[in-house]
Image (cartoon, rainbow, N blue to C red; front, top):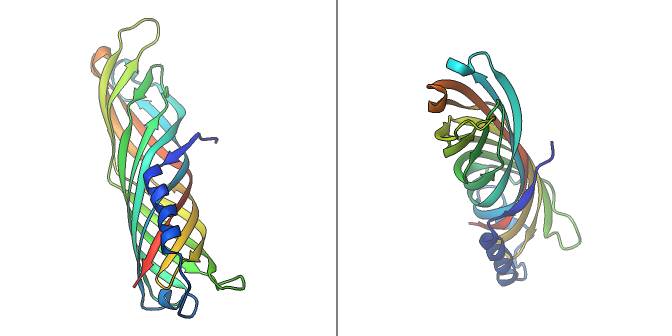
Length: 247
């Protein structure tokens, strides 16, 4: 499924590249020595996203009873940033946590007969993260690739006030929608460049897929209080860049 893309957190991207230019210094220790077993790292990142969500709706009462439908929506990113903390349990394996904040602008969606249009919304992502670092490469040994797996918990999806436009000239209305918690899994590949003894620049690409759905019950006053259950399953590709400090 194709998703639209947009710049995610331009301020943090600019900060990342400016920091790289400032921090880049000769490495006085052995390559990656300060990023080995026992080290702790703190990182800040942002990036680009190709993201969307599948929606499934089922009418539960009133005029919507028995209706069922599906649709997809593009989630165009407005901004976002992530703060990560990891600990190297071996020279190659790092475990840690990430706190990430995202803002999206969703396209209209129509899983049933009406079209639903939500304003921009924000989500928090609390992530358990693991990385496996391969051996350094190139003559300088300042480059190394990594693989990873991230398990994310999203406590809610606060879509807020959503405009409902009915067909055949039926009066529109606004409903409040908050999706429930859900879990997502992300597979990560990337590369790091050692800027100095304690700093690295990182580029990561990860595909994230919801392994549970975010659910919401929506009541439509214009339809006499009829209700529908909606299930959202977000997924997409994210490319992130940032800097990491090891101590």
